[in-house]
Amino acid sequence: MIEFAGIPFSEIRWQNMPEIKMPGRTGHATMQTFTRGGIRLRRVVYSLGYESDHWCDLGHVVHVLEGTLTMRLKDGRAIDVPAGGSFMVGDGIDPHSAVSVTGAKVFIVDASQNPPQEK
Image 1 (tube, one colour):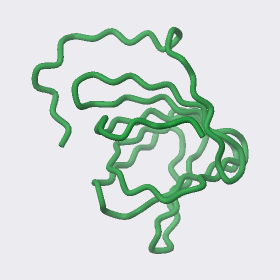
Image 2 (cartoon, one colour; image 1 turned 180 degrees about the vertical axis):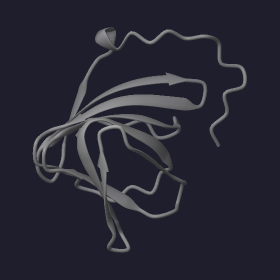
Image 3 (cartoon, rainbow, N blue to C red; image 1 turned 30 degrees about the vertical axis):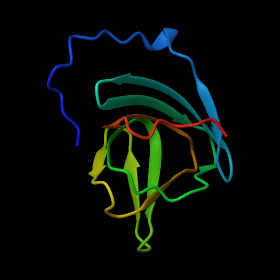
């Protein structure tokens, strides 16, 4: 469960944050992560032609800053989320996988219990 209780004011200087490059089935994602308390904030840039190599069942709130992100759901649905659009999904509900034909930049808020690992 994401809780904001007890988290002090925290300025985030993304330009000073390390970037982790993670390969997908095709393309790659470049991720910057800031964690405070039980909350993880991420800036992710998906390359042109990116396709995730796994299904994710973690909950997220995602806002697309640039480009278009297509979310494929395990039940067969595919939802295009254009720049300025957002979506959220709960833990263990609607396993999903990211695809971006044109590339995309997104901002993600989720719980910090499973930090990303470079592959």
